[in-house]
Image 1 (cartoon, rainbow, N blue to C red):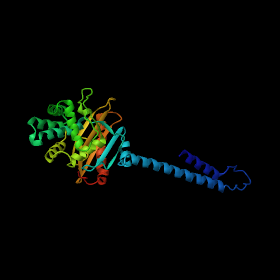
Image 2: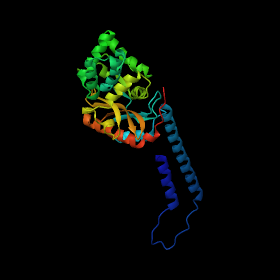
Image 3: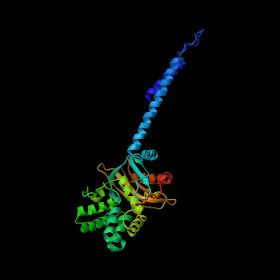
Length: 319
């Protein structure tokens, strides 16, 4: 680009020629510089072609690295400040139709409560096999993100599957059923936080699980309806993002501080935009590191998604 500007400046100087005094009685004829001008014009054209070729190469490389990456999504997320990511698509077994942003993976925090509940339902043989205590704990864990309720449910899994390692593997099997072959449920806590909440869960894999759940590709129909019904009744501190987009939605959020003290705030869910189901997984780490700023970022992303991306999401992909 600097070479292009320099060439343009040279062309301007050549065309202008050398200035003289206004008091000169006679002005000699200007020398013929047409050949020089033509060479400079040709050089500018070559530099423009080079710039266009380099830009095309960068765009091709970005598309090859992430076929679903969308420049509009990336530009919107980039304007928010901090780090953010978004994956959007249809219910079913397919991947996201659109994605973007600098955030790729991070701690699951309370979003992992959804597959924990799914595993409890699976072990119980469906909603009808739950105890009264489990029904109450599931309601509180999903609708209010109650950590004690989630811990009690996970303790049931530990008792059923032989301890922390077995319970963690059992929840991981729920993700495998959705096609996620990489996520490993953490068995290590941090600073008093739960072990499972520290699970490294990428946005792409989280989308895959949510799309499978919304598309009827995992679990039995009664358990899916029960779990999604709880996600439709989320309240309390979770009513941001998909809960503030202005459309019916089923979702679960998670949030917590990283080692640097900055909050990661994330959500996964499905919203009904004028009769069309849109699966969303999104996350943000704001520049100021606060939970409130993270909530605001996700609310903006959810509203923008509903307004600009719903028509671009494909029909349900099936299982």
